[in-house]
Image (cartoon, rainbow, N blue to C red; front, side, top):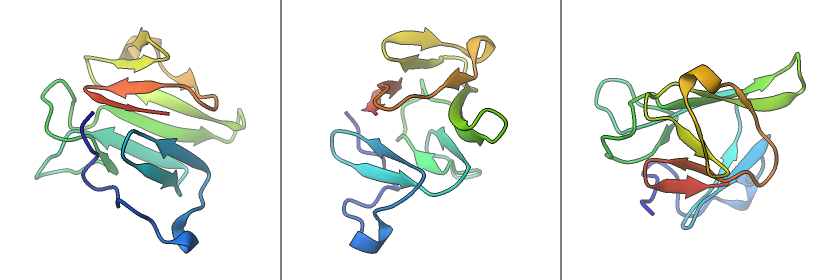
Length: 113
């Protein structure tokens, strides 16, 4: 798995909190906003969470957002190649997906919970 480039290898104890936690093979990332984007590395518009240079990943591939109306996080898929959610391909037409704890997300070659 590729390492997400903008995620610090080790966060300070004070930084280890958030609304949700994303865990990959070599990273932990604490979500501290109600909305964040995932995408390929880009010079023009960077995603909140960089998934490397894989061309199968769009510059803005997916968006994680908290739905106050529904009281939960949802994943909007924006990239045409979709996102695997627990092994099931989710395309933009099938999103948003209600997120639950420990769902395995795969975007390109990056996997995380």
